[in-house]
Image (cartoon, rainbow, N blue to C red):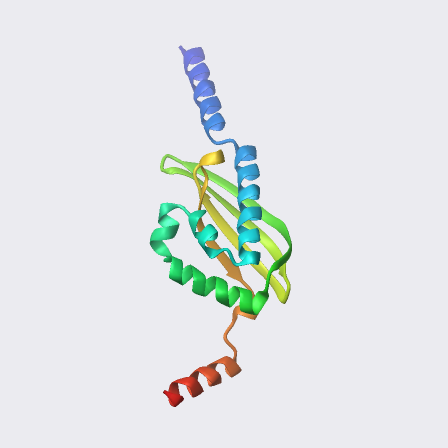
Amino acid sequence: MPRFFALSFAVLLALGLAACNPVENFDEATDQIDRFQSHLSYGDVDEMYLMGSPMFRKSTSLADLRNQVGVISLRLGPVETTQRTSFNVNTTPAGTRTVVTMQTRFEQGDGVESYTFVGNGENMRLEGWNVNSSRLMITAEDMKALQDMQSAE
């Protein structure tokens, strides 16, 4: 009887690992990030939006993404180089989530990008994207210009 449980556990473990192949998720995430960054550099916001999961599109409208990409393009410019700094695959009964963090050099400064994907392998979809950079901060000059614009209205 103990051998039956040990064998059952080994079979279930093997099936679980086969369903969530971290190497496959790594390869697919890398491919998607390359495409996403290319679309970002060329201003292809519609294509960036289509790469998103239903949850991505529910939480961010196309107009909002256009505004965000506009600010990132203005303040940072196109992607020049990028390097993965972390990669994490987490599988639960609710599904698989893959988070990849990239250290990215843009034309006008550095930033850290975080990509969150849901699903496995070729079924992975982008659920979240975040860019952190000091170049994206609002400066005192920006605030003054905004106040001047509002006063002029």
